[in-house]
Image (cartoon, rainbow, N blue to C red; front, side, top):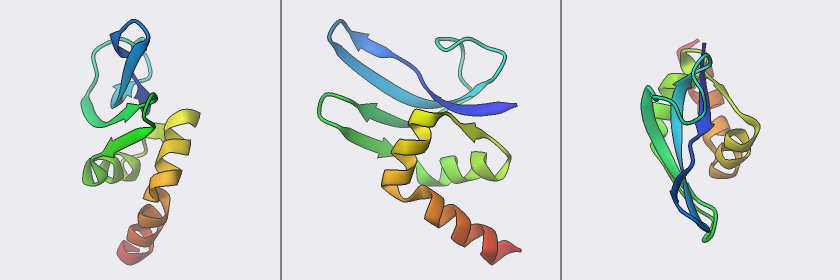
Length: 88
């Protein structure tokens, strides 16, 4: 199973969190399948690759709670539900 998770990078007191698609069996800092976004908690900025995130969600990837909240603010789930009804 694949999940969308945050992966910690950066230096001390200056963390940057890439949003990655990662296998459930690997650890948090392990090898990721694909980077699908970035989250800067200091400035509260997010950069998301919407087509990649929607593709992983269609394939059954489960976002973690934090990634779910970030995606919800960006409006990904409204677009996901629109695409889901369009194709069905």
